[in-house]
Every structure is written in structure tokens, then in C-alpha cells.
Image (cartoon, rainbow, N blue to C red; front, side):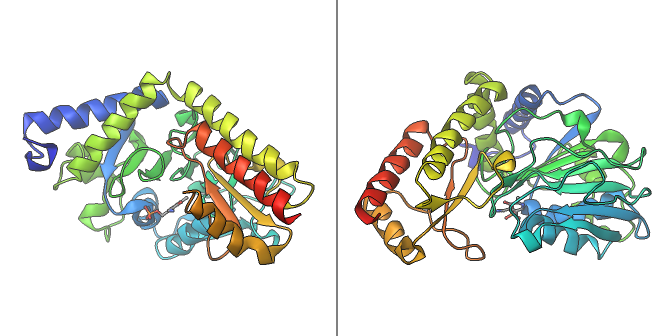
Length: 332
Ligand code: PMP
């Protein structure tokens, strides 16, 4: 019987989901006072579930907006809480992260939580360290959809971490939420039952039929990441991959350019433009001939974007860099 045929309440599937959770706990060193949930609806559903579960409608909550995903999260939160965007990188075209020393943004001292998007997938901007909520009773919430399990993270710095599985750990359809236990159980009255963390926590993510096959796949990936030596080793590989690509861009004498401030460049998503922007369509076409696809930048940014998630081997990045050098030599 394949996983697709199993009852989600049978002992076979129970052992699959329990092993997946246990391996994820080992990978991220998740303490026992945090609950791991395997949910559906993508990270976008969490944009609403987070304010609904974690605050009252008249609570203040703060959002640092370093790209379009953070912007979408903030926009949704306005419906369910007094949400403020306390900093936005929009005027710089989302190429940087603000300083945390108080010189660039001011937190609401009563904010229930401070929300960040740990890695902005479209713009390639990644937090390398994290701001501390100004409210001593507040907590940090992070969207880690596009850098989940790409490096070690100190979970205790966060009240809640969430991520769609589809970038680094499995197929789309699984959304992982890691939430501190004391934050569960206070959902607003209007919260749909399917968005209530307490319902899912009490039912061990089996309140209704979960995406069983997706969870099984995530479990295989967690096992593989552990076999690779855990997230310390995974991060080393990701750093080496990103370095090769950023070096190629920075050493191209301006033929290629990455707009993101060096200190916050993403290890996962590498956006770059061509000095001669009229060559970009040809770059995409020629790359496709060499079987390198999905390099076109997001429609809101243009240029190119190489997403080099955990599953991309160093050899893949090296092949891209060799192509970039050849293309430059042809067109410089
Ligand atoms: N947040 C980030 C950082 C993302 O990259 C994405 C998807 N690309 C989302 C949220 C939305 O995720 P989903 O499609 O799972 O709703």
C-alpha cells in the first residue's frame, strides 16, 4: 500500500508524521515548549492565521517590510489587528535590511509581535541576524518560506516560524508552523476552525485529512538533511554555492549586477541584471538551450534570478557561472 492509499489515522501514517516531526525537531533543535504543525493553505494562509491566533483585534502588531511577501503579510494583518508597517524598503526597491539600532525604525512598545520575512524570495534580501521586539512581552514572528532548513536557526528567538514546504523541504501543499506553546489557544472568536492553531495542536495536525503524501516527502527530505550532517553542513554548502555566483557577478566588471546590499544578500535567491538590458531576453534563451531554465526574474523586478535552494548542487551553479562567462565574452 502506498502512502497515498493509507488512512491518515492508521498506525502506518502515524509513524510517518511522527518521524517527520521528530527529524525536523532534531534538525532545527526545536525545544519541547514549541509545537510543530503540518498545515495546508500555503504561507499565504498564515498571513491571516497569525494575527487571528496571536492577538486581539485591538492589539498593535509591527511589520518590517523588506519585500513584497512581507508587504502582503502586513496588508492581511490590518484586517485582524492594529497592524503597522514600521519600515519599508520599497523606496530602495527592496535592496536592503534596516539597522536595528533605532535609527531607521521605531517599534510600537505595546506591539504584540514583530513580523519579518526572513528571506524575501523575489528581491533576494535575507536577514543575517534578527531584531529584538521592543515590548518585553512581545515576540518575533518570521516567514521562513524561502530559507527554511537552509541553515541553523535559533528557534528560541521566535514566538512563531512559518514556511511553505515547497522551496527547500518538500512539495507544495504542506505548510509548517513552529509555535511557542504559550501562544496557542487564544484565537479570536471569528477564527475559522481550520486556521485555529489549538485545533491542529490538540489533534497533532490530524484534525482533518492532512496532505499525507507531501508530509511523507518532507520526512524523506528531513532524513536526507540529517544524513548530510544537519543544517550546519547544509549551510556550508549553500554558502559555497552562493559565493560562486555572487563572485561571478561582482567580478564581471559591471556586465552583471546584483542590486542587493552585500551584507544581506540571500543564499537562496540571487537576482542579477545585465548592464546591457537589451541582452536579457537572449541570455534567457541561450541559457535554456543549455538546459538552464527558470532564470527569468520575477515580473515585478525584471532581470534574472537564480534560485539555488538546498536541492541545487554546486555543479549546477558552476554550470551557470561558466555559461555567464561565455555569454559575457561573446557580448562584452
Ligand atoms: N512568503 C514567501 C517568502 C514566499 O516566497 C512565498 C511563495 N513564494 C510565500 C510567502 C507564499 O507562499 P504560498 O504560495 O505557500 O502561499
